[in-house]
Image (cartoon, rainbow, N blue to C red; front, side, top):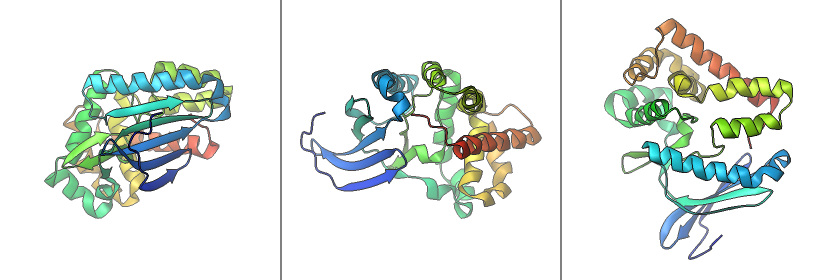
Length: 241
């Protein structure tokens, strides 16, 4: 990978991923390094290509994603250098802010517009608010690992046990367009349990974008089912990459 005009200024880590804010040709950039589970090592090139295609397909569909400056891969990790597109928006989804977010800004609308595109184009994404960042009143979707889609699902199933495959099948279904409205509502509850009291206005707003087809009772059942599915995968420590 080219290191032209790179200067490290900040490091932020999460499980399996390292993020570094750097300079690239006098622009602010972020380097994301994802460590692969050893079971994926022999498929690193295939996974890398799927991620490149996933990034392209989401952009082609009309989602706003960062410009990718550079990328590479080896059997242990995948590296992507992209433009810095803003700061996280999780604070907006805390109980004391959610009503204002929905009624007095268009940030939630921007998110739902992107989810509606994903549903229309029959793509897959993880709609959690942590995967969106804000800069100059515009949101950008920043999560391209793993590259959710049929080819990735089949590759992951190939190295899963039968029991893991059952859990992963349910988990991957939560990234499908038909589940995204319920999924993002469940994530809002996971961010702050107190948001349960705001579910009716959340439901009505998501309905505006035709991301939910059910009545309110079944909306609640499905979002709680999705929360349960995600927690089961996490509890079983079933890796994605």
